Amino acid sequence: MILITGGTGYIGSHVAVELVINGHEVLIIDNLSNSSKKALEGLKKITQKDIIFEKIDLRNSNALEKLFDKYSFEAVIHLAGLKSVKKSNEIPSEYFENNVQGTRNLISVMKKSKVKKLVFSSSATVYGIPKSLPIYESSDIGNTTSIYGKTKYMVENILREIWEKDNEWQICILRYFNPIGAHSSGLIGESPKGIPDNLLPYLFNVASGVLKELEIFGDDYSTPDGSGIRDYIHIEDLSKGHLCALEYLSDKHNISFFNLGTGNGFSVFEIIKTFKKVTNIDIPYKVVGRRSGDISEIFADVSLAKKNLNWTAKKTLEEMIYDGWNWQKKNLNLND
Ligand code: NAD
Ligand code: UFG
Image 1 (tube, rainbow, N blue to C red):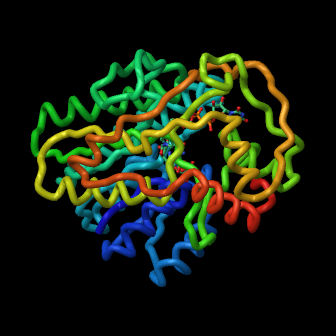
Image 2 (image 1 turned 90 degrees about the horizontal axis):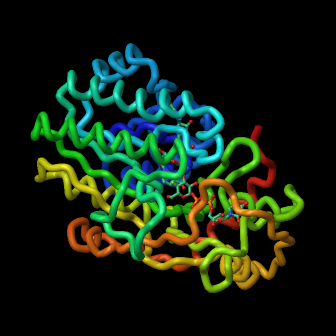
């Protein structure tokens, strides 16, 4: 059985589908701070299976211990955590407690139960401001521009130390670029609570009339059209990367790091244009100042994941937007 922490969340729910349809037994834990049990209904419809769910907060070590006493896990895919770059700078201690201490608690219980296989969801934010592009796994890390990025960097370092002290661990760190879109069934997708921070969920809410206009955070970057460039990746491709990571770990006692992106960068204006092409909807927007902590441009070199994980992202930007919008149309209201 594979434990997925944060499994009712955006990425976790898609990873759960990928694992279950490929024959794995899955158990999900989540404290539901940024998701709801509704995701489990979508999961059941897609997989035709009941996935066991336990409401557990990673900050509660006792609850984690009881869970590991009750079930026998082969591996853990650890996605639970807080992810808003903006909020991380407003409430840093919450981010350290959930993301860093929460991970420490999980690792300590895993160690006690001799479960030493872990896939961890890190982020491209660990690279900070890139010195050159594309970004390789060997590029500099640590000069992060937010507390959120710092928590991911800290967890990566904790995991390196764990592995150095005990080489029995099997650890795969996945550095996600910008996951977008939704499952092609339209049954699960991203439902952030409150007003979204990320570009695509915000844009979808503008397109559906829930929000008035998109604010473009700066058109004065040194990019061809002046807006920020990111490496967007379809959530289904990203999820498949986790299955490949588990397969890779089956016979390796090492710690490894992989970029999960497409290797292509798109600007904010290109996203708006592609949305129009896919849906025929114009997005009202205004250009405002740069968002604090944002970088100009980042995209991944993805050859290491191709070589070692036998994984590449296949879906186009059009497919990402089509599937994301298909989900959003059915889920028009912002969650509280
Ligand atoms: P999400 O908020 O949809 O999912 C995270 C889940 O973790 C939520 O369901 C939330 O309720 C749960 N959670 C938070 N704190 C918890 C705690 N203390 N105990 C138990 N559950 C807790 O976010 P997501 O986009 O699915 O991200 C999943 C992981 O991937 C996160 O660690 C995030 O930092 C990382 N990541 C996300 C992105 C992105 O753009 N979405 C990019 C890079 C990395
Ligand atoms: N942007 C806007 N307007 C908005 C929102 C975003 O112009 O309303 C711009 C940003 O300035 C940036 C681009 O759109 O140029 C993408 O911004 P997102 O907020 O969607 O994504 P980020 O690259 O800032 O960060 C995301 C996640 C992090 C993750 C990181 C790298 O929020 O959790 O990707 O994986 F770590």
